[in-house]
Length: 438
Image 1 (cartoon, rainbow, N blue to C red):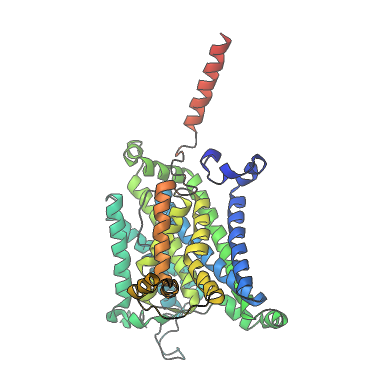
Image 2: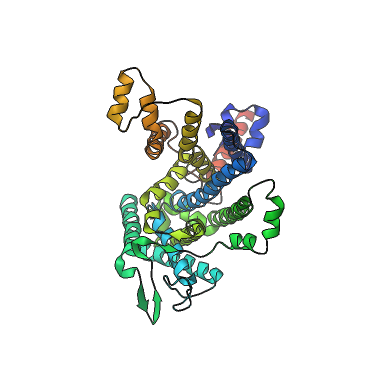
């Protein structure tokens, strides 16, 4: 994105515009602004040091995970033109596969619950990622000839098929090739232990004891896990940048802009799109492993389409075709829309004395008609999830009207490694100069 198209750069002094052109500065400044808002909210709510650290830990945890998901969606849509609405389905494949592979074999499970194959966690993670990539291949193979909107419907349906399949009673526990495994069905299944938590409960326990007089012990393992996930985010970002800047990535952008022209140049567009889709699905499988799997328990209810839509909103905010925009969009979405309403609710409850009860919207309107605004506030405070959806809709309407390409959208990026437009401008400038000399 050029400086002229950047809505923030246009408002900065000329001395700061050069700094703002750095992607790292953009991400850091946005994150610092959101952190500052949450620190102020924590001070108003009376949080101590542990409370503030826990608030920022949860904020950072969700920002990192949504950023990984947004980067994959941006790889599919922003660079490859693939409208993938089945994000949660591939996350489910990754985490369920890893869970089944790591659970103790039949007869060795001390809890007597569902058994598995007893593989080490690193091996199981590789298996989960490969399984998600393979399912991505199966989903993409028959549907890549479809238009964007039909492809989106297919991937959404595929994700629902996966969710319903793991919920089915037939797969709750079954035997295959002599091994008894299962998904746990609708009741869910316990996942693998978090290695970082295990470390601080064992070898790293002295570290927790050393800081327990200052902050809560669980924050040590919590922040260590968040920092580890941040490193994963950096690796995913590096991988995607390497992909899109490679000849493979330039062909993907050519497919996105004009698939027929790219095919006419002798490129096997179907094969390239499948490879791009499989890479993204493998990363999504890994995202499911480190996100839902790290919580200790999974169930089909965690993999509803709403999570996919939230990740897409982060991409829309930041703008398709921009990795920096995907991360900034995730920061803004998590900080304002996803977690923001909960903090607003606590602040209102702390500083505004509300009385009465408004169990439904007509009651709230009735109180408002009588001059009592507390009814609307009471009803709104009890509908935090609905408020999140309303804010999302308002934001999307504003973006479609004011910034249809998002804050940092860059889908018009050159597919070629040679900037033809720049060369044409230089030639025109040179011709104009020569003409003036004559």
